[in-house]
Image (cartoon, rainbow, N blue to C red; front, side):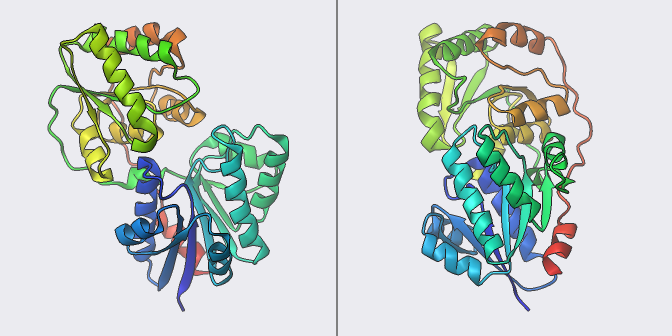
Length: 336
């Protein structure tokens, strides 16, 4: 019998990390030893359907969402950091609504490779925990999320982020430095100026690649940073690199000698590729991966100069990374 699976997440927005997770998830589901039918809730359903060879419905077409959930067996929510309100309360309410509907329709709910929180709104936090108590299977990618649920009596399992499962090709290093930025509360003109000053101080003789991983949100900031670099040093070799495909982003990161990055999955890919990384923490998940690999990281313009000085003088050697998400257990849970 075919298992009908719905997948809900931050899909269709051309966000590098989320789209890679979706690709890995759908590819592995198709390898299960029983028939599956996958429907992804996406803001770009035609693109998602074409790229991944799955069914897809528009994320905000509630009638289609209702019909799809009613006829399905399982909802997979994730991966990523969906259940938090630091980005937006509206997005948290949306993902909770999808979980709520699935539970109302008596579907099995799987929380897939997520990080929970922060949820600052007490009402939304209580609603989240109430819904998670009824979830069928929960895998979380950090111990803080595990502990948060444990205090509410909710069982969950620690897991590796699915992006660790990617097999990387060897890339030639060409003395390039990557800068990856995204909009955030910690980013303002003063931050951009100070970052540009440090990049010019330490890397004026290098080729600077400024990476946009989600063009809709990143490109304007990347262009601003490039302009600030050229104000400080008109001769600096800096170029903004547009995200034209996930495969290109991975190749661009793997070819770097060093990466100064904000996004969690940019840091992850760089670590996996053996690229020296200086994370910029805009979210707890970035600090989590930095601490996991004992990395220096920037928390704001106040500690930037000191952090750069410490970072420059440290040689990083990453341990052999064998982390992978175990899809065999997910297969068994879906099969039952």
